Structures are given as C-alpha cells and as structure tokens.
Image 1: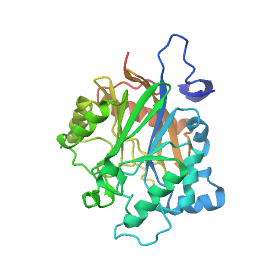
Image 2: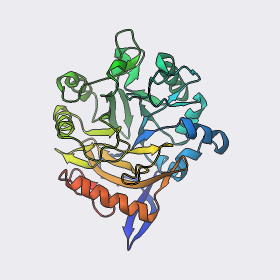
Image 3: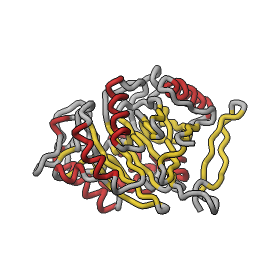
Image 4: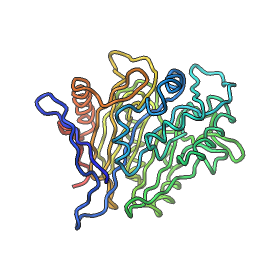
Length: 346
C-alpha cells in the first residue's frame, strides 16, 4: 500500500511518521501524488562512488519516499554513455550507462533531457543516453534524434487521471533539435507563441499538464520578472504545474490561478562545490497531490546533499530550508506553512 511520509517541525524537531498517502476515502475524488526534484547529476565523483557503494547509494534514505508516490520526475543532468569524446565546454557530465540502475532504484519514472548537459558528449552521447533510458523503461522528454522527438510529450494515466509532461530548455541554443538533427526542445523565454500550440494540443488529451523547464543562469535565488511573466503565460495557456530547474538552488513557489509554479527545484544529487552563502546542497522533494481538477497541495520534504548522496535533511538544515522557502514564496504572494505545505486549490 502506498504510504505517506509526513515531515513537520515540532518544537524544533523534525517529525517523520508513516501514514497512507494515497488511501483515498470511498467518496473522495481520485488523486495522484507526483514527486518532483531538480538536477540529478550522476557523473564525475557520483559515477565513481556508485562503483564502490552501489546503485542505491546516491539516493540515500529518500528511496522509500520515491517508492510511495505515483510518479517521479527529475531533470537528468548527466549523459549515460561510454562515448568519451566531449564537446568543448567548462563542465562535461558523463556516467557509465549501467548507472541508469540508480534511477531505477529510486523509481524515477520520467526524466527531462532538455538541458545544457544532454549533449556534453555530442550527438552520440545523447542518442546513447536515450537508448539507455529506453532499455531501462524510463521515460524522457525534451530531447531526441529529431525535433519531432524532442517536442514529443509523455502521457500516462495514474488512478484514472491522465497526466501529460513536456520538456523545454532555454539553455544552449545551438543544441536545438532540427528535422534531421538530434538535440533539445529549445525555446526562448518570453516567446510564448512558440509553445502555445504544443500546450493546446496536449491540453485536449490530459487532466494534468506539466511543463518541465530547464531555464536561466546558475545560482539565482529569485526568478527574474521576465521568467515570472513567462510562467504566468504558460499557466494562462493551459499548464497546471511548472517544474523549473537549472539554478542549482531552490527558488520560491507560487500559486497562480490554481496552478503551481516551482520556479527552481534546486538539485537532487551531485558532486558540486557548496557555496556557503547559497547552500546549494539544500533543497526539497516537492510532493504534489493532484486530482482531475488540477494540483491541490504541495508538500515540501527538506533534503541535504553530502558526499555524493542525498538524504532527508537533519533538523537544523530542514528548518533553515523551510524558513528560506517561506520567505522566497511570500515574495511571490504564496504561503508555505511551518510544516512545509502549500495549498493550491481549496
């Protein structure tokens, strides 16, 4: 049976208890719980750590939570390839293809490949990554062998609710997929007309429409007004949930017209240098409960990355993350309760 992990801050302590997460009352509407997380980087030192510590290691003690949801979505910021010829850039991320098992251990259902690392090892690396995910049964959006494939959404039904996911990025414009060229589903932020057709087409097929979006520069704690305006335009066009990532630090969340905008979900796991003033090792699992009428609630589960592994955050880190998220979300006119809950639709 699906179980719910409830984390609250009580008298300065993080309380974790088990309870039914999807045990729907007889007369309650069907619902799903979708876990979102940010950049998932399995290359470099994480790749090496898996060699000695095993496939489960990078996801630490959050694995049980990921096994109790209906759907798990992350941004895969790593190629999964044996191809060694990197393209010229500052950082190139590559993991051995068998490291896809780490995603399977965490029951990651969908990854976004619309980002600035999916072609770190060229077209060959991207295509092998896609083939590796396909062989593992992990869905992917936002990149492909052609523009048609890169733009293709993934649609799935859970508990009678139809969910659609489409991926975009505004990073690396030269990586844009073309008719016969592998690449990403690249867009310009603020050009809403370029994506309206995609959204309107998918809207007719699904109850919940999710856009997963790799956008903006690194280490930004606040979305620019241009990004806020674009997110609002996406919602106005028919999007229910925006899953943002790229900055490596979490940004505030916003409830806008009964839709949920997660401007940046930070990082899930990586080997990155931690900037003390930004604490990019802290983030959350973002658990969204939704019905056919749209997202209803967000539950924030504080996490902490250390030694190439993500775990539930200790009390001090969890409290600091929640307090900061409350402040950043308040600036977006959205309330986060002391136990990390955002009510989206009443």
